[in-house]
Image (cartoon, rainbow, N blue to C red):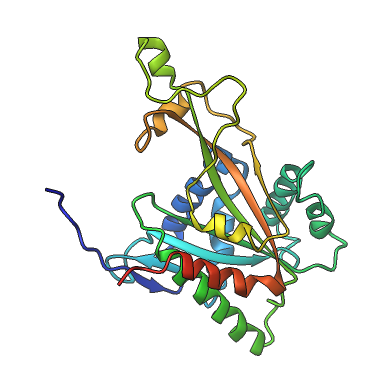
Length: 262
């Protein structure tokens, strides 16, 4: 007999006095081994400087740490901030030779494009059904911000995410254990999504791209992430670029796909 734990999730605006450390923890998870390339404290401060945009999901009231978050940053407006320069340089370098070949031009300092960088992450035991609510809130908040003449008239949305592939376990190799899954030589690795909504966003995107992290883990790193797989797990970075005109339809599609069953 399986035990079922009912948990009530609540949505909140980001709280500068409360959420700093929680956001940093979630961003470390989002950027994985490359998180050390960025000033996450500065990034958390920037996110918290716009508390009326974006949301957190909590289980124990507003004073508790977030289990999930979603926010958006205008890369053009904040282009002079060092942490945004770090992020922009990083994302530009990772988009080369991909379907996102136009991204470097969009993110160049002289570009007139208004690219909104969406950062979103949740702990692994948080259900994906929290995602539609965060995206829906974002749409409403952007509309309210525009009515107040705030700089959120985006031309494009860039979603920073992560995916993973399964790789043969080093532990299994060392112990000569039989594994249930064996990939044929030369076969392409299947891509799995930490955020299932990414597959829906792909259908509305200009393009998307998966890339290797700059700071690769050691050989045993994939086995440390075996909590939900018999195989070793190799995380990779992922980006999705969506034109502003198609973003609302993309959010509605995510909501339809991940609609909680009643």
